[in-house]
Amino acid sequence: MSGAIPEKKRSVSGEKPKASTRFGKYTLIDRIAVGGMAEIFLARQAGLEGFEKTIVIKRIRPHLSKQASFVKMFLNEAKLAAQLNHPNIVQIYDLGKIGESYFIAMEYIFGRDMRRIIPKADTLGIPFPMVYALKIASSVCEGLYYAHQKVDLYGSPLNIVHRDVTPENIFVSFDGTVKVLDFGIAKAANQIEQTRAGEIKGKLSYMSPEQCMGKSLDCRSDLFSLGVVLYEWLTGFKLFTGDSEVAILKSITEGKIYAPSYFKADIPEAVEAILMKALEKDREKRYQTAWDMQYDLDQFLSQYEFTPSNIHLSNFLKQLFNDELEEEKARLANRTPAVGPEEIVEPDEVISAAADVHPDNVSQRTSAQRPRGDDKVVSLQMEGADYEQLSQIARRHGITVNALMREVLGGWLKYR
Image (cartoon, rainbow, N blue to C red; front, side, top):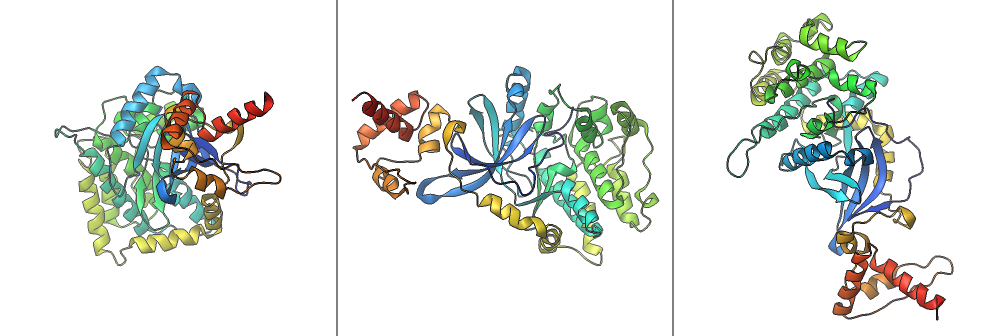
């Protein structure tokens, strides 16, 4: 069914960080979530002159990498999503395969998704302000409109539809920026057959009627889903529920949608009108573009007594998650080196990813390492051509230059 990642199991707070693991040209710092489709890692990409970039790696689960139909769909959709470059969309940097694992490298957002933000506010007894919900929805509309209107180099529409506009795919950074993630991946996730029932239900609740009925989808499907999400944020009630998948589907396609003021009397009429238009089951009566919906949201906010900025949203979020900020910073600071049998490398990228050395600085970098206990460091100066030949041998064997040197020296000592 629909969903980039089903209900995620997050890392337990307070766990001691595990040693980092090398994954191609990336270093996996910590696994932050796992679902039926993928594992998500906080990772770091290193470059020249000490350059570092914190990113997120979404690594597809091994059993799915063996399903040809899923892999084809996943790659096609991810390639489309990688063409999106907008402030309100999480950027995809890389797409590939390392070992048996397909992966996506994407922008890291220092913040929280809306599936965590609303419950956190409830737990602290802090009402989530209506204007913040509307501001976030407006930003989502801006990202959606960009993606929906995206064309290729020849001007032909890419016809991108998100298909999975849910609270967990709407991220708010601690600087107040709103980001939509997992564009297009939901279509590939539809190919998954092994998914727990609870995960399916959670995704079904945000589907559009046409999506439930298996019809072809366009941008208006995403707007219905956003309407469902916004309805939930404003009223505190989940719009479509049921004891089974069939019951949820029937609720979406046939059930009555009560005006939000039925649950919360103080919702302004203008806001109610926006919601009810987004939630029209007949897509011809719905908002036809995300720009239309954003316009109405922004018009209301501009005339309201308080119009929040990114700074307001940032301060509110930091207040909610003040107890978690230090833990997050500690995770980012984890620099334990990747060692041992867990090291994962791709032969074609092993030099830049795992060794990160150059013939001009081999001596400098090696001598700068600190010995542990009785360990000794050997510094070796060599010509650039000799080092390149050594690198090629290492690549053929799928190991790093350092590992190759240790093996050669170890063999010589053993058989001298």
